Image 1: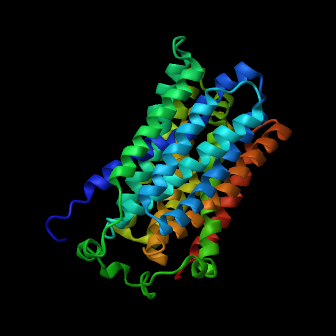
Image 2: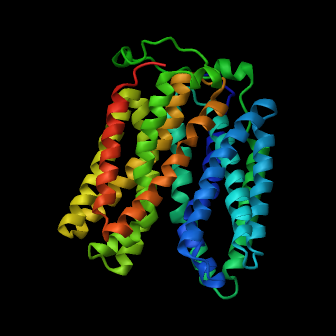
Length: 406
């Protein structure tokens, strides 16, 4: 790499941005006072999170288009305004659940989705030799937000002088300021800088898996490739396990005999393992290559619901802890693999748009939690839900083995 090119600050700014943007995953904490204040049902509040995930994905697509036509700076600036406005307006709610769907579900989801895509695509452009580590660090920041900022938000909500309205307003200001600073800093490398950046190391051990021709695929070309759709379905099966377990992790722990305090702690542990899985998966991707990393993550994703099913069957708290930790780590692998896979298979030139399309796998994956909850309600337990998740992960394993080249 040519002397004078400083690239690590772009990654540092990206990680901090993702840490604040990831607060939308702390919905289980942020939603509690809304139900108490307005009498909204659990299903109404759950629908808001589903909407948030849908518009998060839509925001990624919008970000890809906008970044291609303008720059990451413009995209992140728009994301800052949308996110700030969404949280600020949510703090002024008066009881209409439709307004919650608009302010938090649509505005916050769209804004965070735009920031997520723009920050990741611009930071990755500076690290062609470390796609996995770069993606993992960014994803770790996003995944750790629930533990770091979620607990702070929970404390503020319980503080009478702040309350839930003040908490939403403060979060909006903080996220807006952080993304505004990020918009001033982040940029794509110039052609001269890109040419001077270190190239990916081609190791002999990876020759067979990288035997295909490396080139930049447009988004249209990418979605016409069977490999993309196999990968898309594969990542749905991976994300479905994490999305589902996160939605009822506390209740699950309580059902096997965990204390209320331990069950609450395990929700935080799940978040920590999620962040850990993201950065570990990135490092493994760079060290071992795509095929081995995807295989390892797939095995973890199968083990997670299997161990948890064993915990339910035996009423074992230690097994439940192990299952939730495995779930967090495997869930963290999904977005990291997606980012690194798209860059490796389909090139860097159209990465922003291509990654946003790949990330829409969160939409179908988010509905798995609804199905699993319905199964749990109809059967009176979680066994049927986890049998469904195990079946999904086995299908994912077959899809994984079929992905060989673009």
